[in-house]
Image (cartoon, rainbow, N blue to C red; front, side, top):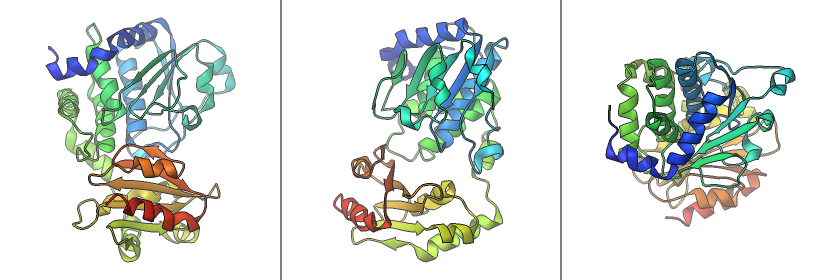
Length: 329
């Protein structure tokens, strides 16, 4: 089936890179796929989607996925990551790096041992570290780039319902269910291509957003303890003791951040979670319209215009964070 003009236009700057990726997949018998630490839907969905697509179309290849498991997405939405001894990495393999722009955030350092390295990302470029780099900051998700690439490959390749479901979770997750301003006509066309595979969209959403009874207590705590700044910045704080009382981990602290997304009078919203492993506080920031990634950069973070992450070395820095966000409104 012919691709839409929008999908062709999206691919134009990267056609040469797409060809190099396909040649690399064909050349290497062993392929390792990596992504960023503390993975989200886009990181895991793109990783598992690409791994499944390669296995479906090149069954003779050995494909492995590496990185940390997610505290709730694994194994509810995605299978557990592969574990391999150092011996596995001594033989030649192809490395994919997905959804991450800087080396320090790649989940497993053994990606460097790959004979050929391919990076595909939608974050602002921080540094070059791959043989092939495909970076498009206009994409709502890294998976949007990967699926566009797969659809532009010359050849008779299939998109199985399983691979499509993984890619779809990534697309939905990083576009905020198609609500963020990064969502474009092309984003929806990619979604349509995935749905054509025969995936069950209803079951996919059920898997992604299934909750447990204990999750209600976390939501109740957030609703009873959030604060709103004079300029409409809503935020909640989860220190270590509260996390222990609520039976959640640091990674789960941001799960309720979007509860404020459609509230009139709230312009931006944040979760501030004390890290149980490092002496810092993890911050997730979202907004309706204004770009908040500049503020995130001021606090050792960054990301997208309406969805970014940051870090506070002390909770005493929280007032300054809220003050900087207030300046935007």
